[in-house]
Length: 401
Ligand SMILES: Cc1ncc(COP(=O)(O)O)c(C=O)c1O
Image (tube, rainbow, N blue to C red; front, side, top):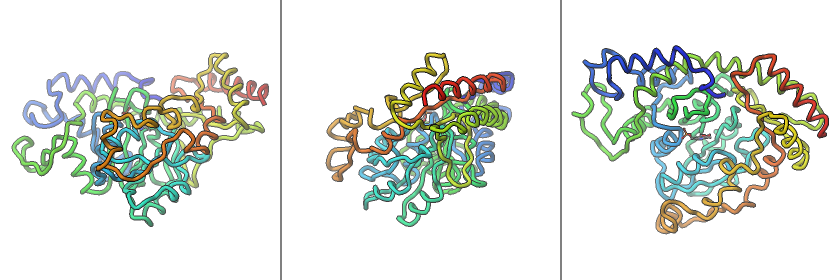
């Protein structure tokens, strides 16, 4: 991670095609654009990579979540179960739809705990949003089985795990719908951007029209002359983003290969030490290897380890106190401070149920996060540098444990 570490001639060349014909808008201008459709081509190639029938590009991973939730039929007052360890955008997107995010615990995969998902289902639940955190897949077989048994749709938030998989299925293609982010820190980047993927033509049609002010998307009629059947909004990706996305997608196999090499050097060095437990993968799970994630025996040793590695200048993340990725630290959500406090979506008549956001509501997640250390895997790290990093980490672990 991330794609911005590999920007070069391919990105420049694709962007120049857009500048050369002067059409920055993804639709219309059939004569002027001389066959250049960057966003459309990015969608086609992205769908091919992920293995779905459809892909719809949008402005961000956050808007992809919102558009996907709308396309799955989520409406004000519905409950959507997700996990309390995620970027806050997953919760914000649910709230943007007027729906209520219900937090579930994570397990040692750092992703949704299927047993807790089952406990959190109520008659109001509509959709389940597992998040593939830090490059690695959730327990999708169990999550899907529970969702199917309860008549719920599954939306995979795959913002952080492009290229991960369970068996032969790439993450994002396993549930009813998947979303991706191409913000500046993601595996491939378009600066800002997002994608929704699905095999379902109905979900795709709503997503593509909702993201474009509700314009009917009928390939046989020129856009802007056609009708519309509902109000949407503007979440359109532009041609510059599509151009960079195409170039970045062309690098995906190389990115995944470098991540795999560097990740295995670091994780192999650590996994042999007693007291260190590498995060779990679900059965047949394949990591995209953006981060090496491991647990120390307790909070004190994790704190000491974190202090020592950062003092040595090594980049390491401790998520327990992170303000953006753990519900226990979201004082705005805990106090239900939306842009419409006291009204939307937590006030009557939108919602008459009960949801618990108290900082103590996810004890298992809090316990796992305080033992967790995360080392980002850089694409710029050479094999030799990865070996040095691994030996420094092993040394500090030996001193600490
Ligand atoms: C899990 C997760 N979901 C959604 C998003 C939102 O993506 P974006 O920044 O493109 O809006 C992010 C971004 O960090 C994320 O990590």
